[in-house]
Amino acid sequence: MKRLYFLLLVSLFVTHVAHAQLQKGNFQLGGSLNIYDKRTTYFDSSQEPFQTVEESGFGISPQFGYFLSESWVLGVSLSKKARKFKNSNPSFAISTEKSSSWGTGIFARKFIPVNEKLAFFGELETGIDWISLDIVQNPDNNPSSQIFNYNNFSTQFSLGVAFFPKKWISIETSISPLSYSYSNRTDNQVNVDTNYKTHDFNFGINTSSIFLGINFFINRQ
Image (cartoon, rainbow, N blue to C red; front, side, top):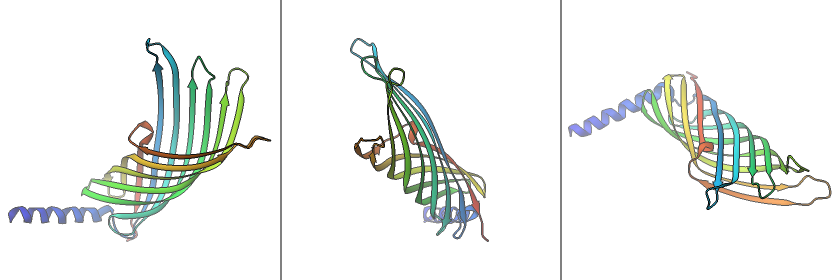
């Protein structure tokens, strides 16, 4: 019985402290930042390098949300992303890719408060990106280029933790272990009719799926 009372008191405390910064009718204003830079070298059976893949990029995503309850937030987001990719193989042609995009989407977030300073959350976001992609073969010797402009539809699920140094601000880190995207792109070159359809499902964690964020909470009361 004492244990039951203790659990009830803990539950009441958690609910109370959640009210301090997570209240129905409040607004959430903020976003996340993602920067990554990775390089992978492949070796043959003689331990000689035969291929190097380099990739770097960044993404920034401002968000605006509304608290439907003390733990649920529904909102809209914008995004800006850029990516560079280079594949170097001495035996074959070198290829590079540069892309940039703008996007918008909607999201739903569920907060799970731990105490007045800490809360876990899960977030589901779906949206569309308008992408410009430039692929160059042999950039240093007789280069040939393909330019694409297309849309990409995506959905991703994120898990994270939010730290509240003050009642009106949170500092967050999150991972996106599960995502899916679909794109249908057509070559923009004159007299060329090339079409690519891509379905991309990802499950796992890497440097490009770790995000840092900050949010401000606007109390309407």
